[in-house]
Image 1 (tube, rainbow, N blue to C red):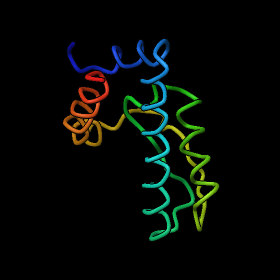
Image 2 (cartoon, rainbow, N blue to C red):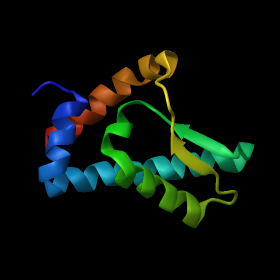
Image 3 (cartoon, rainbow, N blue to C red):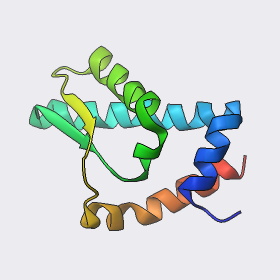
Length: 104
């Protein structure tokens, strides 16, 4: 199966294990947001790229960790437009992560 977010999103909608793994990745993103934000104290953190495909449930999982564990909780939301430099930088990470999840 080729690594692409559409395959992962389809499985997310019907396979509980995949859904759990995707939401766990969202919680991990929440911890990363906290770690960065504890150092810089940003008011807002934008999430971009293909994670937006997972919608509000993914975003809420990130926000829940931010609210619970952040020293300086920030507003967390999806970016409105895709930034090509960030998307390009994350392509390899995304490919490896999706391949790992789909291999389960």
